[in-house]
Image (cartoon, rainbow, N blue to C red; front, side):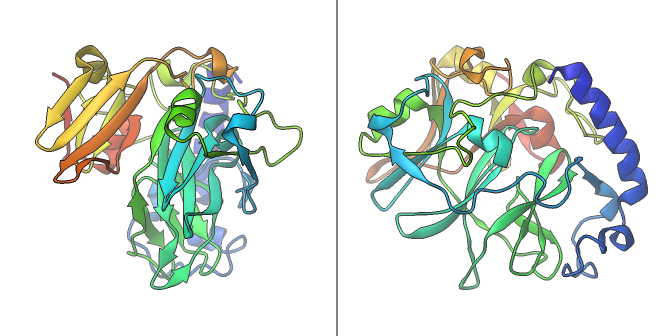
Length: 323
């Protein structure tokens, strides 16, 4: 889908959203959600187009050894996650069509999430107050970011923050777990015994197609009506760590940035998932590693490679380092 056609759909969805951003309207589709509890204004939540579960999560993921995978080019991006000696790769080409994978890695229940409109890939510990939650897509967006829901209470969760914003669990926070977006080649090199997510459908390719052709070089984001950051393009990639972020352009230029005990590095060899229709032909945006120096050596830390407008929307008091 070209940028122009996606934009036309986005404008139509925004128009429809203006009339439907109300719990009175939503209650027909969400009878189990407690709309008396919220931490955001309902006017900030809009329809992304699909209905509840219209973008289907993967709830029974299947994997195969990375060494046996065919048809997945070395430079395509995957969400790489390892826990307790088990390592798994989730190709963004698959996540593009599902956005959430409910899984268990190293014995820990997790939600592996990807929001294409924000390029936000985050892995969460799926446990809250001793209960394991499974997540689906609401079809709603806030600041262009995926709004998830848990199937236990049907509370709504902001993917970028991992925070419940509507419903019984409002205010609860999911724990983010360190993960990487890296090329398939780098995953295989780091985890030769790792496994790779198989497509949920036998007709779905591993590398996947990108329905948002040219999105990450567009002038403005889709389905976003908030303020834009100053002094930086809205769609510029940034590496976010808490309330600080560094531009990908800066890291690419320097190759290595140290900020206190945080160390970030950049190396070429990964396709953008949001450039060309065929992800394996996307331009090279590089591989980013974000780690912290500890007494026991370097360890991966939670970070997100997202767009400047997203960081500004959710961290308005945060700092974006450009030089």
